[in-house]
Image (cartoon, rainbow, N blue to C red):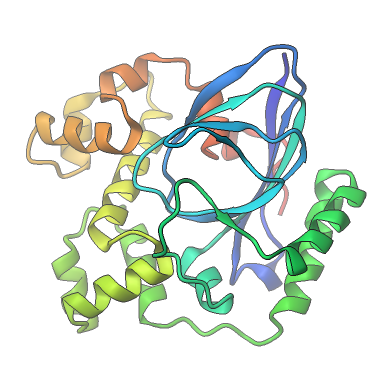
Length: 275
């Protein structure tokens, strides 16, 4: 059984939208079942093989291409047959704005993408064959799709602020910096990102603690409480379990190789990283 990933950074001219490219290769030889942990970005996902099955929250096979949104809790995914997945990790506030997409609409795990636009793109990516050729094909698609310079608005800046502060700054304090009404922010944030600001900050904070733990020899829960600015260890456990479906003790004892690949956490470990 072979399961590995490659990663690459986007060229400068598409960094207004694209954060990272990922390629996940599963050669078969046995089933893999693990979680997709909520991320603070959205992804355009293209499968070139038999797509995996989502077991939770609702059992179904994934389509050959779709938008993976910001979700509030982990999905359980099962791979059974060989598949190569090409993932374009995007900034949610930017993608939803330029595509005029409402990410607040209900979805179980993914949003279908319009066939008229993305079926031809899927064909181009399929014919491209390898990771870096697919990156070049998607880069060309992006240049043709949106030719104007992108100017950040207030929601983009609030998204960046939450990321830059690792989800540790109270949402009320961020609101006061930007002078935006709470109800207005809730509505616009939901439409552009798919979750409310408080939930988004929780996702960012849990990912921040996961990142810290990956450079330490073992998980230090008191350090997590301190660095995550939790009230106490019970608060940490509650937040962590809500996002990952596991307590920190259970999560950090497990073999995290597969869940890291599924959740885009192995980028800095990959020799395939290219800018």
